[in-house]
Image (tube, rainbow, N blue to C red; front, side):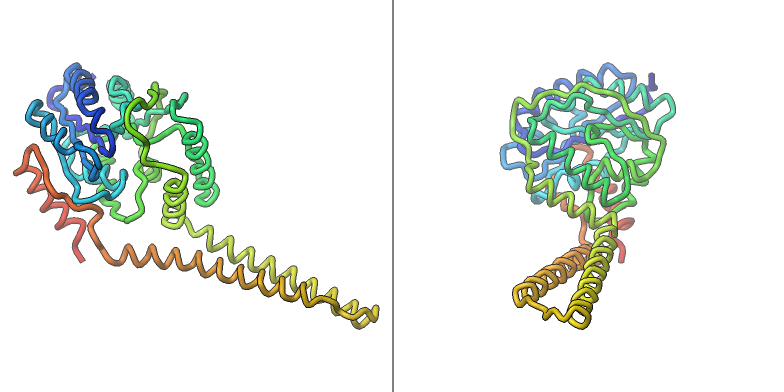
Amino acid sequence: MGNSDCLISVVIPVYGCSSCLEELTGRVIAVMEGLPTDYEVIYVNDASPDDAWQKIKQLHEQYVNIKGINLSRNFGQHYAITAGLDYAQGDWVVVMDCDLQDRPEEIPRLYEKALTGYDVVFGKRTKRRDKWGKRYASRLFYRIYDYFTDSKTDYTVANFSISSKKVMNSFREMREQNRVFPLFLQWMGYKTAFISVEHQSRTKGKSAYNVTKLIQMATDVIIAQSNKPLRLSIQFGFLVSLISFIYGLYLFFRYFFLDQPVQGWTSVMVSIYFIGGLIFFNFGVLGLYIGKIFNETKGRPLYIVQEMVGDKEQRSGRQDKINSTYYRH
């Protein structure tokens, strides 16, 4: 299934799941010890409001393979994943959530599938155990994303995956501000497989994603990856202009050929307000794109590391390489 010279990195972003970490660590270590490979587990604390960082440091003292990254503030899940991937040394890299809904016991199956000739293997949650509101919000997010990006994604696929070092090197080259980890991997086009995995119910903690955050993430991702909203606004503006032109011809015909005076102060005001609203809407869409361009041109780092535990010298060298490679201007 593998060889002892192979290193597998397990990257786990942490937010609001301090109570899960001891159980998660025990299960991950039990699974990884059963594989004929070396391994490292990298917890990335995304400024969790509980005592997650203290727990991570305690786990590092207890287990030599546990490493930790503490971000200076809450940057978001996909930025935390990016931080972990930047520091991961593995020939294969597993990404999973910290809330125990992704079962560590599925990692060997992901690895076995990858060894049959795939660069990326995703866990497909065929029967999701989330609450119905989150399930339907997630499905709506991907449907909107697919429409605006002319793509086809599967809402049962999330972060739980294993990727080769080649894929991770390509991922590290992608430094844009708007990030969704699984969509980036699928965009790359490497040979990808999907396997069905068991999805657990959430018993501890609370999801950080609500409907508002999903809508915001959908807007950011769509604006970052597609210009279809701009094209739709142009098409809609043309349609409104065409309808207005045809209606103007109709009024012209009534006035000069049917001798019917044009009535309608109300209709004129409604039309003005409608066109005004349409113009402001189009300006808003354009403003979103300009705002994203502004964020990208600032060239700020995707995350800031406040503290680390585990392989400090190696990690320091890795950070210097990241800075010199990705943040040159």
